[in-house]
Length: 159
Image (cartoon, rainbow, N blue to C red):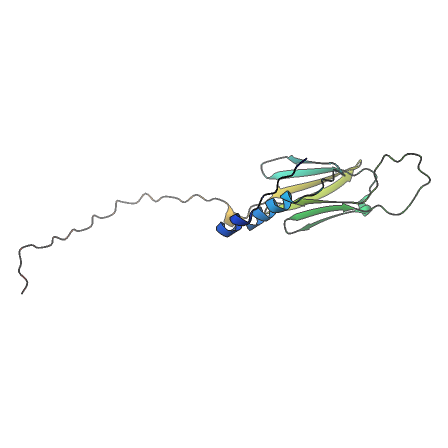
């Protein structure tokens, strides 16, 4: 399978304020291997509400951490070294993991819950009032007074 790489450097020269988007596109194009564990879903539950659901069977709350730093959400898990016996077959994955999610501006983590091997993280995009579109009222005042036009006098001789 052949991978295609894109050069975004010409866009950096001619765009202003799109740095984060171009960096995200550049990072996405450099992904070398796609790790599919643990499996997860991303669901849009409302206009500005999202939910991430991760299947983390076998992990407890103490073995996982969730951190948000600026626009990056990192979910990681580290199993404690406690062997319960000799496994004849091990089908439940217990390996360490770290899953990163790039968050858009103004997306905040509301809560995280672990129940029945499913980690659920609720997110909300909260746009500040200053950035929301606002309607400008058009005043219905009287018409503007007509401007007085001045006539240039013709025919006067200037000495």
